[in-house]
Image 1 (cartoon, rainbow, N blue to C red):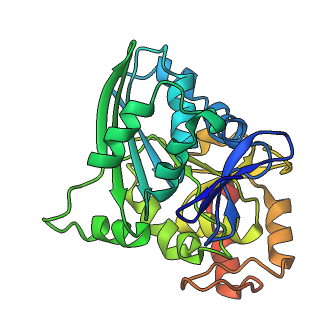
Image 2: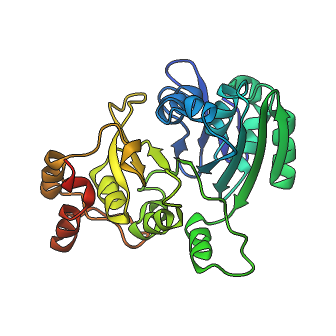
Length: 292
């Protein structure tokens, strides 16, 4: 199918179109397509319609891995009839996949009604609009996400503080392709930037042992996430155990102990290794496993 600026429009086995990055050899939402994956992994799992109906004030969503904007647009479309105020904060190192996708909006099918807003968003890196009863303020932060988190941690005067999220859509490229986005320091910094008074949940598509160990050691509570596509389960993390429907238990902990790939990455270099004795002790001391 059509190729432009290093991206290609591809048709999945179910007939749905998606975007593929040729440079990274990664297809966005590669099995069920952009909308179905966003609905299963984020919209329904996070109970966003219910939460927004019962939420007063601004509801902050961090969109980590903007890509072609399918996750954010699916959420906006599904909640557009609710009287709510959404603040979307998107992060990525490039807007190129969104620019490409917007050119092929008709084929992709998830842009309906937002095209003009996205043109402004691409040009100004922010856009605000009223969509029926829904108010949206959407901003884009360009650059290296791990470095941005460090800047927030340091609290430099030149760095504007980010609004703390109620939910995080974590959709980075795979650890083999983008290890810098899956390290223990990154998730530790992310956890420390959350407001403990503001319950926040973060689903992601991976179910790997190394990811789940990393999230636990960063401070999160971690559980089994909803199925999506060919994945029978994914992963959901949160700063409050009440947001986890199916927390990992001691049986999972025993499997992690035996796994050949459980030791978190500290440096942005992809590798696999069994759990160290030090981290095994830390895992056992996690408050999640004292509660099950």
